[in-house]
Image (cartoon, rainbow, N blue to C red; front, side, top):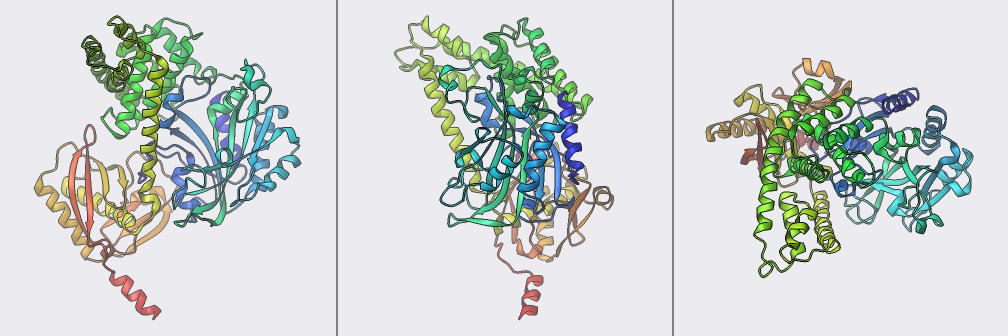
Length: 612
């Protein structure tokens, strides 16, 4: 069974269990400042896991392309990638463990026909705050698993939230215990130190996780406690590529059917075989260019920050690996590899459009990087051991600034009498990476996820801003991104020119006029096609389910959105646009803040009077 067949079999299986298939979300999450990319299938479902009704019902299933930037440095082994496809199914207050675990077991053993003796599971062993998951253990035993195929782990392994363990979760984050399933390979060459104590979560490569059932039951409170959610939910995620590894019984993800043609294209480009020391570099190129292709297809362009920075890093790291393989920096070879990615994912990507974007961006970026690589070589020539006392730090700065390979730095600098040590270089690298991860974790401190009053007001204000931009600039304006914290909103939209002061003043006046009008905000559920026909705006490039929620602000604005929103515009306060900038080709970015956003609307006053 190939990868595409596995995906369809999974969707069909859960549709047969009365699940509704929802479309995959954009790789760039809408209204979510906690992360740059969609890193799991549940991201678009957070409001519904917290209790909000979903237009498509209580049982949902999908396949979601995901990207996790924190895994970039792990790529190169047999199983890690930055980009992957996550199969997901959810119960929003409907079924729970008694249905979820047997269903996934049935899918693995009867649909995919995986041998039962190669499947192992893990369960939550319990903490002082949350008890051991005895229920899952009983279910697994009833399904026929023996004690030696059931392993217990602590919260580091068998608890899931977007911010880690219960201890690390900020207020407002939801999470719960998990039960994972692993596939055991028999043909892996083991490291002797793992052989005697090997278990599903060890790193020797013998086991691969193929599915994780998260039982979403708790929300972290400001006082550090875990409050049960209004309803118990199931949030399942399974890596499609890892399932393909199990079905095709290959411990090397890059040898499953969907990766093989990409690897062959890399072999052709550098005239080397996928073997020995070449494997790690080829895996990096295959993963990074697969991820980069999806980003470029979603209108991300290389930039010096945010998603554009990650794209640039992926392309340049691929170029370095290709250079090390002797493949050079020719745009044609990179385009050929990306074209193969597009061919493998033609159900997800618009082939002509994706090819055009890939060709344009790679041609430009490889020209720039060739210049940067040349700059790195020139910096090496300037090295003076009397000035640069730490050659490893010098090499790291070259790597960080230009993507300049350590091996090339070592070769050049040691001719100048310097001593470079890969372990010391890696220590500097690890220190920098840990600092970067700490900074990334800080993104969880603010944003739409906290549903604070200021954040909800600013989110509602983006609807007014969207409509006002179209009113002043034209109907070509479409929202392509946003990032909202309690302090400010950031709104990205399609427009080629810098806004004039007069245009900004007009937009601000229009928004504040609607706020002063105390327009009531209402919502209704309808078919997506009907919503668009009635004039509702939608997020550009986003895929929506058949049933959607439309928020109306009086007669001024209609927009497809998942919320949350305030009840009336008067609650917002005055909006002030404080900054604008480019966010890529033919895209602009606006920053805005609130002033005096504490007014009560007439609607609130009437409601209070009625209650009295």
